[in-house]
Image 1 (spheres, rainbow, N blue to C red):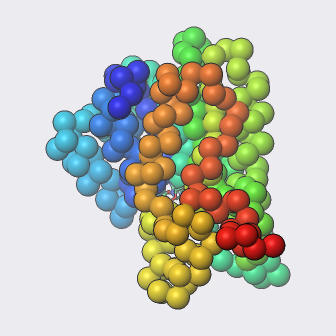
Image 2 (cartoon, helix red, strand yellow):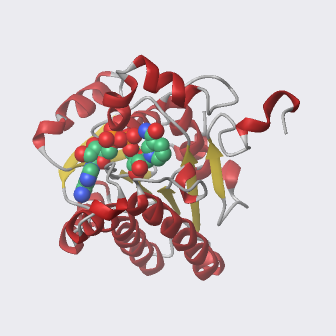
Image 3 (cartoon, rainbow, N blue to C red):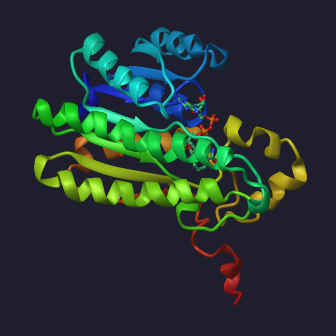
Length: 261
Ligand code: NAI
């Protein structure tokens, strides 16, 4: 547990499922006031709010598309209007789609870049504006992927968006370090969330993924949420501009395991 998170106001984008949901729940368990952003009611954001409240936590929901400037402004405004400020911004919302690059339309490219990369930019910028205006030594955490480092054929738009998030994070960390605003990045490996549900429903495809993970299992959303709360807490007070890989060793050349190579 991180006592420094008690009472802090945290906004999490894409928080109605998968990693965002686990992150929202963990912040609430730490005593933070959580703004749960969701895209559509189909995502059932009320279930997340109800679960948090049933466990004694505090949370409110706001619809918003992170690729839209106006919506991201609304999300930050909502946090300020509801809970008085914003201390932590988690830019988690993201999408992926498998498309060979020769078939990748500009529309599909733009959709992924605008959600994953532009969404992280807008969320970071709005959070920074609020933090600078109110002299808040806040924390911004972006959700990248191992594919900011590992090339991924058929996912060129996704890999490009995550590569962009890496340097967005590092640049903002440098730009706002002297204001006490920390900006960090998390790079999950393969985690058991709806984004992978179809793939992991196929036992062979799931085994192929597990074979790429030295630790030998698909990660759990809670294992990523644990990284996020640590980065947001005062325990990480001297940490800015990093990518925290939470990938079971996936980026450590698994094909070299057991003395191969
Ligand atoms: P997910 O599909 O369960 O969650 C993504 C959430 O983002 C959904 O709730 C969705 O409604 C929301 N979302 C999508 N577009 C949005 C938009 N324009 N505005 C607001 N919300 C939007 O998937 P997951 O796994 O929880 O993904 C969360 C983040 O983690 C993503 O950025 C993803 O790229 C990243 N990630 C996930 C990995 C995994 O294995 N699950 C691995 C590496 C990175």
